[in-house]
Length: 376
Image 1 (cartoon, rainbow, N blue to C red):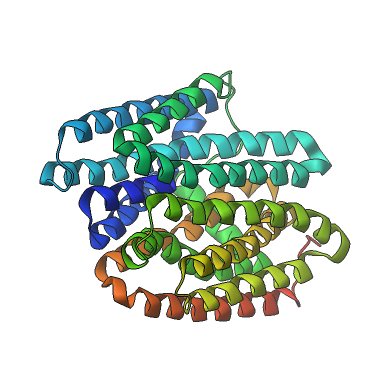
Image 2 (cartoon, rainbow, N blue to C red):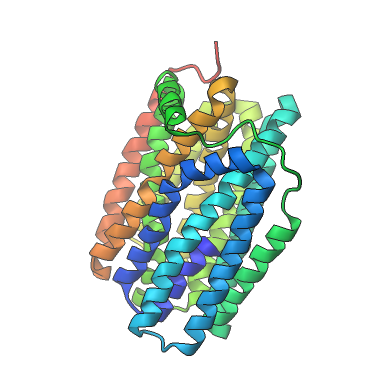
């Protein structure tokens, strides 16, 4: 709801495509900047305390914003400032809860031993199941009940997460490290060519996905004249496709290996993005984004499996932090691009991103075919 609902809220409040793209960037830039800080706090204060504090702070933030937007006129300067600040604060707080949750998943994976890949697959399925509901719920609540209802529901989910979140104060062993740890992670990544090529290809691919995510509220609501509910439904359908692809990929990797499954997923994602550049109907966007995210779901399973196989345990946390930082970098850039471009030019930008995605993924998987994907 935070990732997909806040840009919809900005568009509904301001009516501005540029401010919607800017809000998307403002939500991601602090998340990247806060990553190492979040990891340090998890290391110092424990998973449970950081997760619960972040959830409670997010609940308080969105509740205050809902109150302000109730008494302000939509489109007014104060309302615009409120939703833009909300994008920044929810982005930062979501990063803290995300790092805590990922650290919990890392501990569960290590405890599972040889079954670690199955733990990661289940966790990824949970993420995508939440993404299945979140965008549709956000759009529906915004359309039927306005900002107050959408933000009130987000606050309720945040409070529920705080109540049901992890217990205990055990100090984690795999967290986002400090600057010295990031340097160690970068050195480890450079020493693992297979992982480096895959991450590089996925960074380029994420550029296309981020651009579509930032531009979709503008395309669906402004260009196609559809509702906020319709905009949210696109990403819910995409999440359903990703869940199915993740489930299928786990079995496919066991049978055919990482490279063939990854190559098929990459071709699927790149082909869908190229087709999206020429889509002109809501149904076309709905179908093609579902296909794209199915491919991305398969690629994510390949990435997580490869990380498990290749990264030494002693540098796993620092290398994980570097890979996540690299994969997140396209998101604020995509938001700034949407803010700068007229809506009519978004199709050309998507075409360019699709071509880059196809070249990047083809190069990465061509290299992966000749490199070892398991430690010697």
